[in-house]
Length: 306
Image 1 (tube, rainbow, N blue to C red):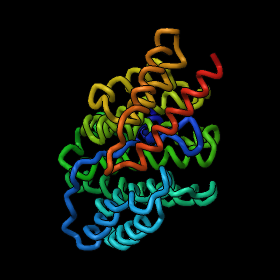
Image 2 (cartoon, one colour):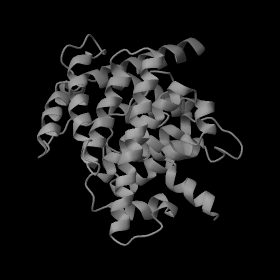
Image 3 (cartoon, rainbow, N blue to C red):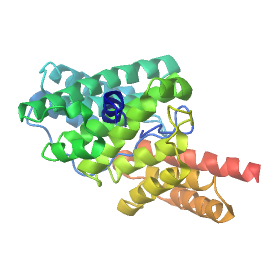
């Protein structure tokens, strides 16, 4: 394997090309109780993040609480080695970009910033490996990288939110252009790194990212020639094995299945109908109402096409 290819394997990894539509496909977030940071700036930002559902109108969130969370996390990133502040800032920027009704240019700007923050966080993690005497980490593939980061509680969230934000940036920039710039490789390898560190993180989040990416990324010879529907189904089924209730796991699997034969299409319809019938979690009602809206759109489109 050439040095250039090894470098690409390390860098590559939406929520994935997280959606079939420009505003679609946000990554799911868990509603597990959050342990507040010991850093006072981050702890206060955590409290505002947990209030992100307040003031919503249907699936559209108010910008107030999430902007306050972003401000707190932003201040905390003044510490050049503070990974936690950076992954939480990415998570908050992701929510703002996906759920507060921004126009296309504003959305792209949010994810441009999130990408930069993710690059910083990943560089800090890389520096920590070098300080432990692990050299040449840039050439590691996702499996080896994950194995060396399992002792870092901030590693899985860093790679997960970096992948998700890269995916949304790709949608805002255009899938083809983003793929030519290496976004698909980056999202794929970040997702695989998450799965290697903790397969259960964000309810199968690493698998969900890689599966959705394989379903959504454009196939371009010599650039994304690895894109495969079989791989999409494999990873999305793995995500559903970890958490079959997760709204994004189900919706993404249904959209991939519906591109198959009659049996798979029937399974897809059943999944979406069950998803729509479920009650969203109060802790993530904006995210899950959005996913239910996407499921309704899919069912309507499939019915019209049949």
